[in-house]
Each structure stands twice: as C-alpha cells, then as structure tokens.
Length: 565
Ligand code: PEP
Ligand code: MG
Image 1 (cartoon, rainbow, N blue to C red):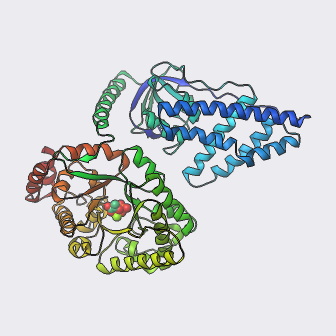
Image 2 (image 1 turned 135 degrees about the vertical axis):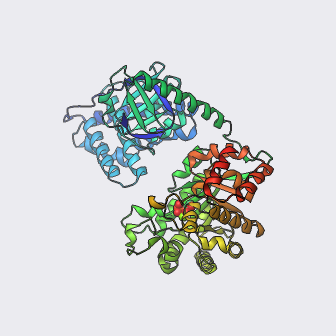
Image 3 (image 1 turned 180 degrees about the vertical axis):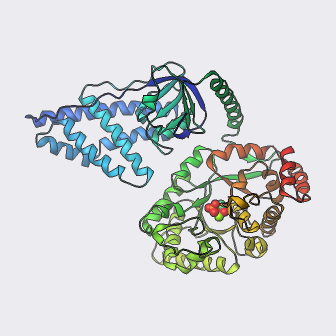
C-alpha cells in the first residue's frame, strides 16, 4: 500500500494510464534575426492563449465559472507585460525564444516555490504549466491528450496540470494519482469539483504502477494499492458502493436550507483557518463562516503580520463570502497553539496561563492592529468579531471598549468599516458557562467552543491519553454546561452557535436542537452530513431524547442511549 495526500474523497478502481511527460529539451541557439524570433515567440503565445481559452470554455461548461478562471489565470501569466518585455529583451540580445522564455519562467518558479504559503507555491505550479504549454508549441510538441482515455482509467502522472484536467472526460476517469501537489493545488480543486477520487504526492507512483495495472485509489484515506488481490478488490468494491450510496443521499441536501423535520431553519457555517478556506466552505455548501481561526495567519511567519497584511487576508475572506456571515476570532494563542514570532514565554501551565484574550488585552499594540484590520475588512462583507477564552465580564467590556475606540479612530481617518459590526464571544471555559447569563448581556452572540469547554469543564487535557476517557462532550457535566449557555443566550435573545467539533456529532445534534442552538459551525466536508442529520429531527423528538439524556448519570449511558435514537 502506498500513502499520499487524499485530496478528493471516494474510492476509484481502474486501470493505470501513465502519462509520460514529453521532453521539452531544446538546444539553445544564438539568433541572427531577433525580429523574426520575437514574432515566432508572440505567435506561440497567441496559440497558447487560444488553446487555453478553449480549455477554459470547456471547463466553464463542464464544471463552472470559478474553475474556468484557473485557466484564464494562465492567460494572464503569459500576457504579463513584464514577462513579455523581459523575454523580448533576451531575444533582442540574441537568445532563442525557447531559452528566453524558459529562463524567465524559471526565475518566477524559483521565487514562488520559495514562499511559505501554499497559495504562492501554487503560482509556481501555474507558471510551470504555462512554460510547458508555450515551450511545447515552440518545439512543435502536441499536448498530452487525455480526452481519449478509455472508461475505468486511473491517471498516473508526476504532476497533473489544470490543462490536463480540462481535457478529461469525467465519466471515463476512475481516479487520479500524482507525485506532486496537495489539497490546495488547482488540480486538486478541480478533481474535487469533478468528483474524481484523487491521491497526490504519492512517492514514485509513476514507477510503481505500470500501464494497465489495476489500481485502487482511496481518496478519503490517501492510500493507493497497485495490483490488489481478490480480497482487497472485493473489500474496496464494497467500500465504493457504500460511499456512492451515502454520497447520493447527501447530495439531495446540496443547495437546500438547513431545516429540521418540523421546519425550524438553522444556520450551517464552517470553521476555517485561511481566507482561501472560505472558498472551500462554499464549495462544500456551507452558508458562511462561523469561526475564522486567525492564529494560523501568524503561525508560520517570522514577524507579526502588519495591519495591511491582515486587512488583505480578512478582506479576501469577506469578498469570497460576498455577504454571507464571517465570524473572525481574534488571536487565540497559548495552550497548544504556539506562535514563534511572538516569542511567548514558556509557562508552567499554559492552558491556564497568559493566552488568547488575556494576552491580547495586555499587548494592546498587537490587539489594536488586528482589530483595526478586522474593522476595515468589515466594510467588505458581513463580518463579526469574536473574542476567545472569555472567563469574566471585564474581558468582554475591555475588548468592546477597544473596538469602540478603534471605530472612532477609523472614522476620524475617513476609513470605512461596518458601524453595526457585532462583537461576540467564545463560551469555552467553565467560568463562561457558569456566568453565561451575565456574559449574554454584554455580547452580541455566543459560540460554544466544546473543544476547550470539555477540557476546562472536565479538567482533562485531551492531549493526555491517561485522561482521555474523561474528555467527552457527552459527559453529563459538559451537556449541562452547554444547555445552560444556550438557555442564557436564548433568554437574552442573542444568537448562539457551536464551533467545537461536537457541533458535527450526530449524537449531539438532537440535544443541541432541543436546547435551542441557532448556528452550527463545522468543518467544510461535514456540512451536508450535518444538514441531513438536522433534517431528521423534530423539536418534540429532540426534546424527548434530551430529557432522557439529562436523566442519565454517566457518559457511557448517554452514549449508549444516543446510539439507539
Ligand atoms: C473550541 O475550543 O471548541 C474551538 C472551536 O476553538 P479551538 O479548537 O480553536 O480552540
Ligand atoms: Mg478553543
């Protein structure tokens, strides 16, 4: 069994088709007639743009507008005036078109590949794709054609380019295997949209599989089996059937509102860590974002991102969501989340230490930068602010006072922001649960963070396997905590969501419906499953289940009972 990164879920079984890369080797020549060489180069660029435009048109029809834009992005790269100008200059100095274009592309690829973030790295893959396309035309090599692949084909290739995917006849491709790429690659996005199981970054798969070998692609687990035995084939055929059946069921919920069996509408949004994940949230049919964990923007940086840098990221997410809710949580650091660029001191007890809102309120400069960036982004969408790890009323008041101060500052500077921006809190500590009634008076909304709430209520570190038997949101104490938080919010008439993992747990959902939760914030791939689960419950049935659960004394009893409802 080979391991890679599962980028598009599902099981694919078929025959391997190895896509050989054409050699794009050329012998650099000194050119005499620079003008003629420039014309040859620009003609090749024109052909490339025409071909790519045709691929974009195909993708627009087969997949959608957003996906077509990936190909249109390639046209923008090749038409970049700086790139074209520099290539012309090199040709003017006597280089042949191949060498001039190749060296400019290599320069961009090197710059983009060196970046830390996946988005910029993806630009390198785009430039590589453009380079192969234009060099292929200059060298008279015809493009790899995948349109003729027979039914049941599993594509095996070192690097899959979006232009290859544009050629694919979706019905004939059972799976995709590559040696490079990851979840955020354009081709991964396309594979997901086309619903082709795909595993990327499988080391040496183009050597391990030969043309015609039977291969199993498990896009959900990120595993590959070459030449499986009969038992493996039987087992994976069964898994595939089951997956397809469930998927068909879930697809019925795409594009539908999230509504219970007796007609109550809920908000079903996603948890994200990067602005681009907002697009993923929509791709999975999320209705917005209930938790943007901003600490991820700080984690891999060598210095704290500036106001401008943060503003761009928050604005990007807001623009992607175009008016759908976007709850941005302020920096939640400490505990298990270290941010090297902040140089946090080591603590005896980091989970109870100087972290999250506590740290931000004491490091005003850092907090001001982030809040100003969020406020500025609020002019571009439906943005809310959320404070993490609240334990007392003063923290909410201080945080809100700072937001007001910064609003006034922005107003004086003539910078736009949303006057009515909502400021809510994470209820994820035992203290917040116990004074939820007081906090509800100070907050525009609550979001229950069961990941931490479970740990702080049970005094059990989930990273410690010796106490993991205590770490469960179905513990009677945690359930009572959740219920009292929701009740306090309802009494104060403020929305109350849940963004901890428990929000997607089918056993928890009837209890949350009964307690009166209004918003579920889950990981993007869970959206349809949660929507389906909610649709199965009426308030009356959920109340019956919750009443019984609250009469039970142990987590095991709760779990055993909920398995039966
Ligand atoms: C939580 O604690 O439940 C939560 C959603 O926040 P995080 O997992 O980021 O701590
Ligand atoms: Mg938390």
